[in-house]
Image (cartoon, protein in one colour):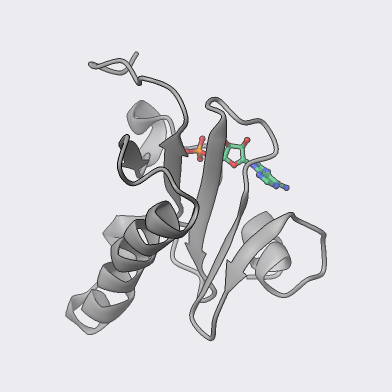
Length: 114
Ligand code: AMP
């Protein structure tokens, strides 16, 4: 989508601190981290939120979580623990309308979230 900031990160039109990329996904550091490790995982294809996922997108949805787990292992925070969050819609706290999973680690995270 031409006016989507995360599409522009995926296409390298705007810079980001990318830690992993493959043909399907990009993983980059959140510009305003809320934990010592705060990464965002996005599909290169534009989906506004999980509500855009259909049966044909099950592989994409699964790939996001499988990649989150792999990154957690590779970056060394799998053992201590981490959190994967997908904010959805206004009450879910979503501010960027391109689906993204937050991967948070590096401190003990509180529950329930605010
Ligand atoms: P959410 O509020 O769940 O929609 O999360 C959007 C996240 O994107 C926030 O944590 C922002 O800090 C982050 N963000 C917005 N713009 C950028 C950017 N250009 N590079 C990296 N992270 C960004």
